[in-house]
Amino acid sequence: MNIFGSEDRGEFIVTPWTVEGEVDYNKLVEKFGTNLIDDRLMERFIKAAGESHHLLRRRIFFSHRDLDKILDDWENGRGFFLYTGRGPSGPMHIGHIIPFYFTKWLQDNFKVNVYIQLTDDEKFLEESRGLTLEDATKWSYENMLDIIAVGFNPDKTFIFQDTEYIKNMYPLALKVARKINFSWVRAVFGFTHETNIGLIFYPALQIVPALFEKKRCLIPAAIDQDPYWRIQRDIAESLGYYKTAAIHSKFLPPLTGPAGKMSASRPESAIYLYDDAKTVRKKIWLAYSGGQPTVELHRKLGGNPEVDVAFQWLYFFFEPDDAKVKKLEEDYRAGKILSGEMKNILIEKVIEFLEKHQERREEAKELIHLFKYDGELAREMWKKIHQ
Ligand code: TYM
Image (cartoon, rainbow, N blue to C red; front, side):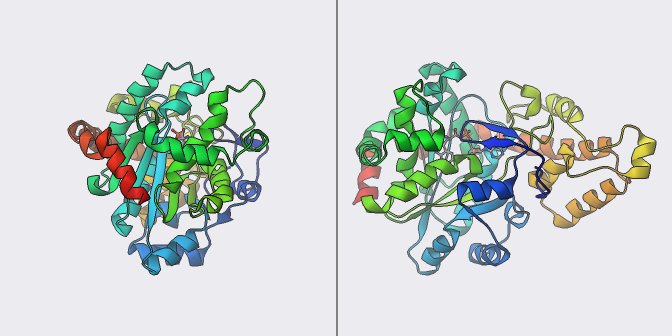
């Protein structure tokens, strides 16, 4: 389904590895057992943050677990920490970076620690990707530059790559793993007897960072990652930690149409963070539109912003001004704005965003050491966290 929450249009699948069909987010919330963010909670959240964000106002981040408890802890002075991550399987696209921009906004406003996991192990273990461990390590480095470019505070942000940081995570991963049996992960993730045993153990590793501090954790991510948090919540208290909280986003729709997820196997479906202006123009120009077949018909009947990917991208992320977005929507529906015009508006926004991002990415090369600890420092960090 589209970001407006209109009715179901058929079957869909959402797992940490697959998004197929047009997702009905209301049904998904029911299926996953999460909660929609209601107006009261949103207002409370914005008040605590001290400012609003369009990703919240527009319910792009639309669902949660225990967000109210995060706010209780915040108000009581107990505080909380943030955790998010990336599976370094290749270059990052705009959909991948959105949770990081939102996480940075949370860090800026709540002044809390952020832990960012790079799961090179997970991407190597997903055999269908055909990555070597060296590839996954290379992509960890490349992705880390994009993540640093978002602008996290180096004094409060720790970025780690599983194969490097494993020594520090392993004791806790064992405690987590002993609490989870095969039938459970099989039911949650759909593992089969053919699944390699690395992947069967892997959920323990994605759960561990949600236990990095003896405070409540808040995880901003798209809703596909929620199955891990469900397991964490079932075992955390028995290990002496808090159940994690989560705030879930919808998926930025692929350029090719409202269904499914952007994918490396269809490069035209996504804009990558390294794309140049010419590529951006070309890809957006070819994007799925909600317009009529001819200009005359469009002027007469108007377009459909609910399926127009250019409008959806503006709504989702690229046009933070509510008044402007509302006018674009109305004018498009009324046939006053043509699909090509909508695309041009998006193209300019995306090019501007990418130019800034790419500049900061260059600067990030000098900053890596501030975010990434290994050896002694990693151990010190671990001790600090766990004492
Ligand atoms: P990965 O690399 O698939 O995705 C990285 C982050 O991007 C989100 N995401 C999207 N958000 C909006 N629109 C989209 N189209 C879109 N596609 C992906 C994902 O939900 C994720 O937040 N296993 C994880 C790595 C990981 C992780 C975590 C993610 C480890 N620990 C903690 C989130 C939180 C993965 O492969 O993400």
